[in-house]
Image 1 (cartoon, rainbow, N blue to C red):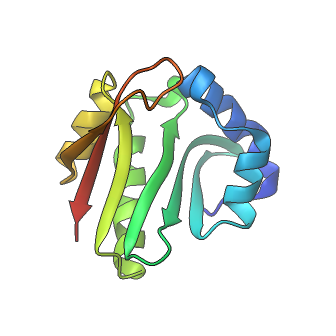
Image 2 (cartoon, rainbow, N blue to C red):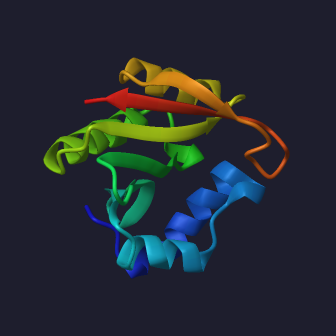
Length: 143
């Protein structure tokens, strides 16, 4: 379902578990959920948020950017990342996007595998993109 402001504490927990020092703030999530040009989905188990994806539409282009995607560590290995990717691709088709783009840490092998399985290709590197100085791989999928 689409994220709501009430989901922010659970989203922040997942964000910290997954990204630590590269985590977004409560204010950033409030903006992404309510005011950004994009959409934000959460995956639920009962009344608990267990995964999410934040998507942004690039102004002046037909690109949809995966801004953040994460699955709570307790719920990994259940193909939830794949389900979020399928939702992202469906959203891209619905909004007539030409491409989906993302950045991923060079050391995040599971995520890179997921993206490549879903048709993303590496097209560049963004040096020192992350808090710890790690590079990001810039990837895209043409629709």
